[in-house]
Image 1: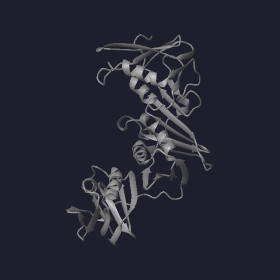
Image 2: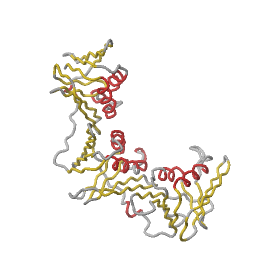
Image 3: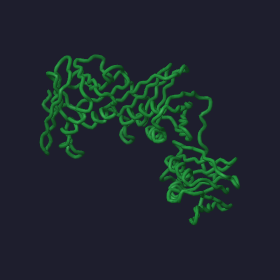
Image 4: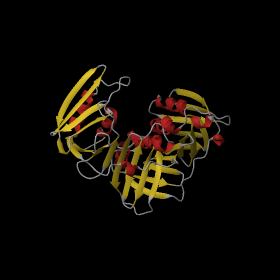
Length: 370
């Protein structure tokens, strides 16, 4: 293989593709990036057997061929090159010579025959959404996925539910639940599948904040995201996902409407004496159009209060400050509604109108409760 291309363009492609390469594995080939040169196009692939990222860039192909180079070493080499043309020339021993300006180096490669083939997503379903919308939907749910070591594997991903003209994303970790709803142009079969959080995190990095279209190709076992110049393919997670609808309280005793920023700032202030080692719930008293927020630990006490519009019964409830802050910080509305059903029932955080997002958080029982 012998190619010449722009070093900056190749470096950017490698930086993105290498995130799908495996860091530590018994299979050296998947620690690398597969380079495939044909018809004046250089295709780059990273794949760790669970997720793959591919992209193509224009290149002058003087000799077609394929080669696998260590992802980290190759990407770091390219990143430090001057913005110029880079030449990569490999021989029959899989040794790649890299030259750019006055710089020259060699990297020992691996035969492309040892690189695993990416799975195919053919005969599936195709859904088109805008990048900014899907990015926001992922941002508002991914923080609630479960940690891999402590939960069912299926809960380490985000569930997609797609039906006529509607898409819903759901994430749950056992103590909190995040739901994000949106309308889309779709008239196919109802779909339900779970995408690993790691995959969605990489998809977010490749998306832009505009209305460019992104396409999802959904198969039985895999999904492919077509994002601009990149394709991200991932396995889907198997298992029985939580029946999240049954977790949402059917009735509400107290409805609180409050300024989002003020509530975040107040909880932040009263949480300063709570640390990873010194944990304690934040106590909230909802009464007389006021939220009284307090915490007590061995480091001291903190008390604050902010105005809110409160309808219904007074309520006192305890909660994990981090879980509530995680939810509030992804709310893009000036105000939020907090729906309460009692001191030991889940908290719901929703927008002032509609159900664009729903965040559910289990409370923490306060010590003075019976």
